[in-house]
Length: 266
Image (cartoon, rainbow, N blue to C red):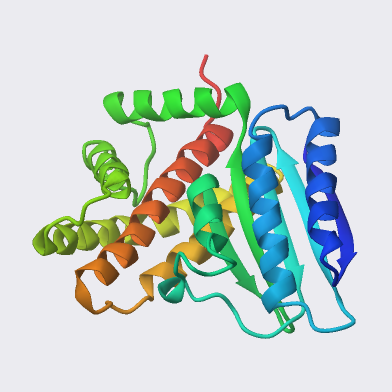
């Protein structure tokens, strides 16, 4: 059963702690016992970022939590102008940690622009259900997923996923040619994944938060695909890592949604 809870907070320093407490209390009441530290840190950073850069004087920001099975989405909405630019984020933003901390802790992350304002969200997979999902993805990658349509081939899928995982884990700068080749592979893979995920989300029984998160991941992947090449090797590595993250996220959504729409055997 999908769950949802939201609360609004004033433009005040004390609201960061209040938002953090609201999120952890909600997770506990819903029965989600792990990853509290990840959610606590991400809510703190998103709320702080909204207060510093988004909430106009005299206005409030909203915090919303949505849950569907092992998936949790945390979203902070403000009515201020401007929008975080992926290509411009740096480790010095938000008092030295900022949105990079959110990106490193969450399973997915994105920005939805409104008129006025924006929503900055992070998604997390919790508990044993997430582990089962990962095991199922590996089994389908080894033996074929049973999916049909314009999706990457069973042979290509685990290879591209493994390449994306490897690239995200690199601390030293890879060679420029490696970055270029992987960037091209990730772009081609995303071009196939995006319509596949959209089709599965449209056919998902009852829609729900899984479909909503999948479509949000598609929107974020398109945003990342539109990023221009950046000058210098370090800049290009950063841009291609955004593509790699979208490959990992959309493959996860594709597998989970396929499980939801695939007819039962027997």
